[in-house]
Length: 51
Image (cartoon, rainbow, N blue to C red; front, side):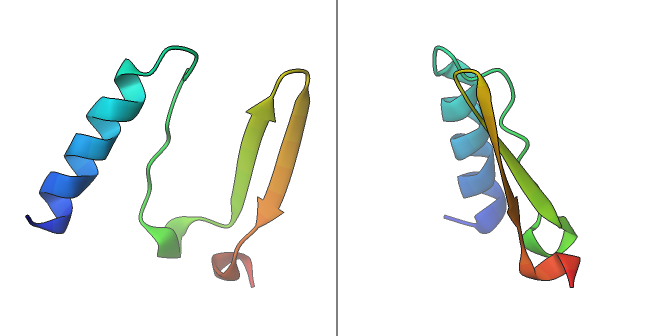
């Protein structure tokens, strides 16, 4: 299975998951910050691409 096919399958699974609003799958080198919603809180995580 190629990375593109695996990426598409994961995107489909996440989109079909109840409660998941958006999955926002991006190439790792283009991501500087990750926002994770959890109830009423938002967790922020910086990545290596932000440096």
